Image 1 (cartoon, rainbow, N blue to C red):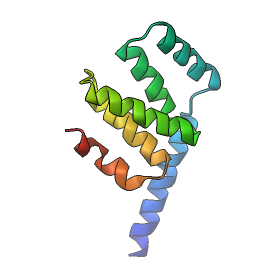
Image 2 (image 1 turned 120 degrees about the vertical axis):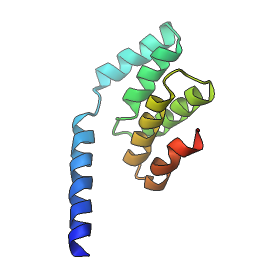
Image 3 (image 1 turned 180 degrees about the horizontal axis):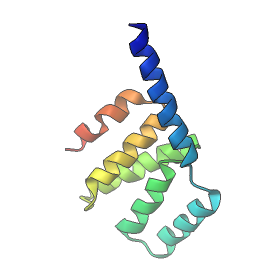
Image 4 (image 1 turned 30 degrees about the horizontal axis):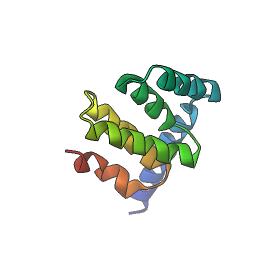
Length: 107
């Protein structure tokens, strides 16, 4: 039993480290926000929200989930990617149960 918990903790630590290393820079987020505002499109909105989903800021993570959920409801072409981004943001928010079932809710 102890081995399983150790393995799970090790896997979580590895995922957390990879997500920490993929946190977008402020410059990138600002550039994507400007692009999204100046040339509104679902693709630009997705790029911005997907980058926000890897942020270390709680409000940005929650905003990413909101945007990605909206794109799914609007029948955006890349719904699987939206689900993945939302699940990533929910994981970073430590809302693990929601991250696991987020894809089921949108089907």
